[in-house]
Every structure is written in C-alpha cells, then in structure tokens.
Amino acid sequence: MGQALCCVQVDQSTVAMKEHFGKFDSVLDPGCHCLPWCFGYQMAGTLSLRVQQLDVRCETKTKDNVFVTVVASIQYRAVAQNASDAFYKLTNTKAQIQSYVFDVIRASVPRLLLDSVFEQKNEIAKAVEEELEKAMSAYGFEIVQTLIVDIEPDVHVKRAMNEINAAARMRVATNEKAEAEKILQIKKAEGEAESKYLSGLGIARQRQAIVDGLRDSVLAFSENVPGTSAKDVMDMVLVTQYFDTMKEIGASSKTSAVFIPHGPGAVKDITSQIREGLLQGQSVVDQ
Image 1: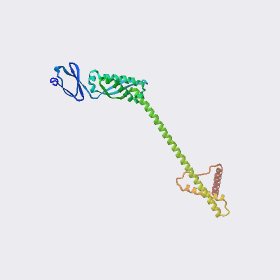
Image 2 (image 1 turned 60 degrees about the horizontal axis):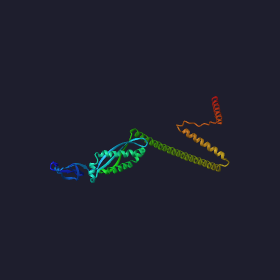
Image 3 (image 1 turned 135 degrees about the vertical axis):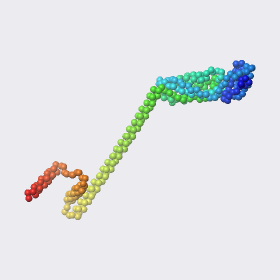
Image 4 (image 1 turned 180 degrees about the vertical axis):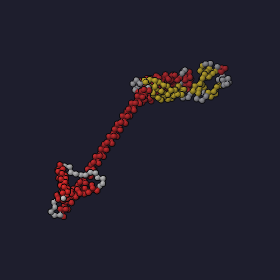
C-alpha cells in the first residue's frame, strides 16, 4: 500500500538504502519517506543498526598437541555514517567475521600450552578484536566486544586433567592427614611422659614422707624408752605393719591373693614351720 502511494516507512534503529534507477542515491533514516517509483526511485533494502552477536566455534591445537575447541562471541554493529558501505560492500557479513576469527585463533593458540590457553584467553580475545576492528572498519562495521566464552579440550584430555587434579588433591590430603596423626602421637607421648613424671614425683614424695615418719617414730621411741636401739624400733614397726596388712587382707571377702615368701631361704623356713606343725599335731594325737 505504501509503495502504491510512493511512501515507505523505516523503523527505529534501522536505515534504508534509496536507489535511483538502480544506483545508490542516499540513506533513509527512521521515519516516513516519499519514493516516487514512477521517476525511478526505490528502496533497495534495510540495514539494522542494532548490536548483533555471532558465536564462532574454532577447533585448533595447542603447543603441546592437544586439540581444543575455542568458542568466541563477537558483538558488532553497522556504523550509521558508513551504512552504505556496510550494505553494499559485503555479501555475507557473518562469514567474513568468522574467517577472521578462525585466522587469529589458529595463529595464537598453537603458540600456547593448554594451561596457558585458559590463563591467557583475554589476550586471545583482544587479538581477535584488534584484527576484526582493523578489517571490518573498512566495510562500515564496528566491533563492540569480543569474548572467549568457552575452551573445550577433548573429552579424554579433560578426564585426564581431572584425574591429575584429583590425584594432586589426594596427595595433599594424605600429607595433611599424616601430619595430623603425627601431631596426635606427639601430644599423646608428651601427655604420657608428663603423667609418668608426675606419678614418679608423687611416689617419691610419698616415700619421702614414709621415711620422715619412720625416722620421727624411731627418734621418739628411743627417747621415751631408754635402752632400745634404732633396729629394735624398726623391727617392731615392720611387724606392726605386717599384722595390719594381714588384718586388711582377712577383712576383705573378695581377696584372692595370699603373700608368701618365695626366696630360697624362705623355702627352708616354710619347711621348718610345716615340720614343727606336724610334730605338734602328732604329739597331740599321742596324748
């Protein structure tokens, strides 16, 4: 209907190419324009000024002969001042951009090791952007942003990298566990040494107290009972403690141990005691 009335409409963020008998005449801005077709004027087509995005997947290999797929995201737009160049000079804009991306990536990545590719992806994106900006500006296009959005190694390489990482982390975990066990053993040994030291100190103090008590008892007994020697007092003390011990053993109903002498001399004493007991028992029977 608009063409019949010689009127055309150009949408926002879009420009149109006006031709006169097939020759470029001017660029039409957004709005309504009059094109008297009867005088040879016509609209050849429209060109979007919006930012467009092209994702390019490029397979190449690294310096250590690992094949990777690099995904580059190119954001570009046509420049309004050079709209005629952007419309007429290129037949397939996306194919042209893709060719330059392939060229730069396949020239940059083979100089890097696989780990360096991941670390220097911003440098690769910058190199792609600079090359595209220099090439596409002659065709009326502006490169807004270039991003390396993904780097995909071969699936077997990725699995091997994960296994290497897992083994390294396992080695670190094993070392940490061994260090922890070492610290526990050291602390346990230090605790046992401290416990034994304190136990020995307590026993030494206990024996010292016993010795001091016995000494005081001997001195007091010697002073109060004239004519007694220190040996007499010690024999009496030992006999008293012996009977006290036997009394405690006999008073307990759960006692299952009996202390008897076990040296060679003690065997002789026990034999004499048994013989005397038998003789006394026989004399009682005879009576």
